[in-house]
Image 1 (spheres, one colour):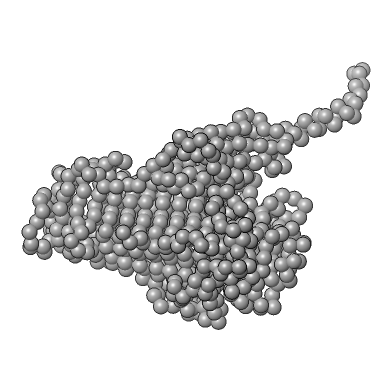
Image 2 (spheres, one colour):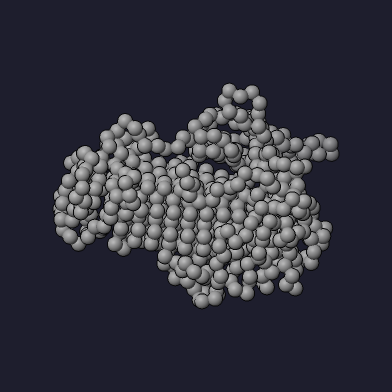
Length: 638
């Protein structure tokens, strides 16, 4: 007969405590430094444990050589959030990790970034990480290469040598008809092709057309430059250079051409102006497109190849084919019925390290997008991370201004302006863990949608700080791990919406220090849903309705520091009229600057590396701090 051992209660308690501690303590895993952009850097720190989700990671950074540290934003705790869209059979569970960005760095400098993990239940493994990261330098034309001069076929004046007729003769060497693929004298890394003023419009049906365009009608570029010696194709500066596609499907195909700079060109009359990558097939890296004009196009710049890296799309004007005079949506519920997709988007990218800045994008279905690519790639090198979209000016979109749908981590959308989108201003569905940062953006007039679209694919990891939305933040399906601070949500008296309507699948989503103008439409002022008694619920969360900010605050614990306000906080604000949703408003029709002593002044939360240098006793709400330097939207004038 086996002996009967009695275990004292104190020992049992100790065993249970150790078991709890083992699952609640955090174990630090792999640390990942994402590709840095010119001004920002992203990081990921994988973990296990931390079942009670109370671990944190603090951040500080300094330029190498400096002695004092600057504070950064804590990394976002991610994990166990479900991202799904049933229609596409898409389901993804976010892994346990921390992720986040350091902002406001200078180009071409090296920084020391320090991270410290802490947990009341204990940290296993290394609790600190200190890494060095060097930001990118701006791509520029190589000064030591050949300079090749291109003239249109009908040019009869003096030429600079070496000279070529048509772009492809300079790029590949001469070849007409069947001989256009011989390519005996291709361009070299570091070469600059100066394209002189004129119209470059090929007849692809002409067997020996002097542009050397083959029957499919595209300029196909296949040579590679290098980081130090890019291949530059730019306007010579003696007048406008126009490449007219004659309605060809794609005009410039750069899928197989790394390290190219296109500058000062006009591309027009084509379905796709610059085709840079196809999912699962091929794409290029280090593509620069600047100071160009893309007009009468269906798509401006496109890549959906996960291996694409380090695009720089800046200071361009992109003009689509959609209605220039009225706003209309795509879903058939709008004033004139569904809008046809005459132009799809100005820019769409996937991959990592891209910067899309200071562009003017008008009259497209969507303005600037990350590809709604599907599940994240397993290969770290192919994940969609570290992308900056900033200081763009988007005008009159059939759907949304900026879509981050499909991003994985550290997607940064800041200081953009959007006027007149039929459906939503900004979009994050799906976001596979995040964070996606929406910081200091201006959104005006989104009559059939809302400020930030989070419905449809239930994103995870949305951070919205210091935005000014002249729109409701009203969604009909849920999101996870979302946090809103220091925003202005200005209700437009929409007849069917409260100023805030949000379903949260996680109890740890939060909103605070925001300012609201509530709608006077007989509806509840706020609608909010979150799991009760558990951290996550992806099945049965429902809205609760609140008739006042005080009721919302008292029953949910949200917006403890939120405020009510009205349009008199602005220098000049006229609300868009919901009775005439088809009307497009001019970008200079309102003034988003705050009035001194208004309810939005000094009402925000101090957030290191987000609102450093604020004036007054606390940061102001919204995108524009009182007395701050004017923000440039769209192309800069040199």
